[in-house]
Length: 308
Image (tube, rainbow, N blue to C red):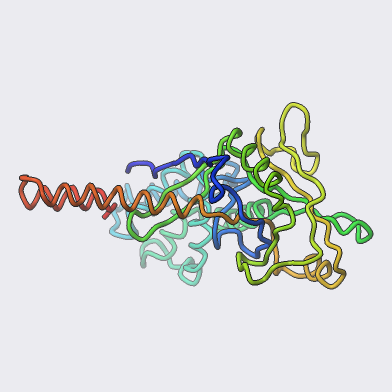
């Protein structure tokens, strides 16, 4: 299967419509942009328990010795990965954790049904419980934001992370990723300050929910001159910011509830890219329709363009 498209986004420094409009306090950054800050989908892991591998190997051996129509190709691929101690992606770990929904069938003997066999394909109790814990750890890192003392009322978190895939999905051309380079992030930060937007803060990407008495008081780019003790693993070129929360009621809401878990960007740059991509794909489709190729070839090419 082809890898998803990865696009580097950039801005025009002199274009008033390019760059950030605001920084939003959000409960789930994935509502607009999924910041995969500490565990990107390119990361892989093989620190799952030895027992998870043994469970998967046992399931594979049973199938080899006895044959089985149970499960799907995905399930048996997962068993092969775990048995071979291969590194697995964050997405795969998430699927393992989700397989917990089948736990009611896990005690079915191999020779009496598929429940126990497929449970072991996905790592059994040890593998699936590990995946659940691992995903919780990953989520905690992805949404991590550090609170300082009540007296300071400052919250610190990455605003942009360099070279980190951000998952996007469009109904026409499907799943793709965007990245920001070090240079682009620096340009966006400088433009944000030059346009005096540093106090443009809202809730959940709703411009009508402007947050008053919240101020950006610290901003830096991770690099040779500055590192982040709070986030030591941030890639070089990442943008970190600290906001001072002057309003006590709002500070208590941020500190004591899960209504907000971090920062998210607001701007027209991604939406503009999607519009440009749609126009390009429609032009390609129009060219195919008006070509002299056969109807079957036209259908194949159009489906390829639309990721169908």
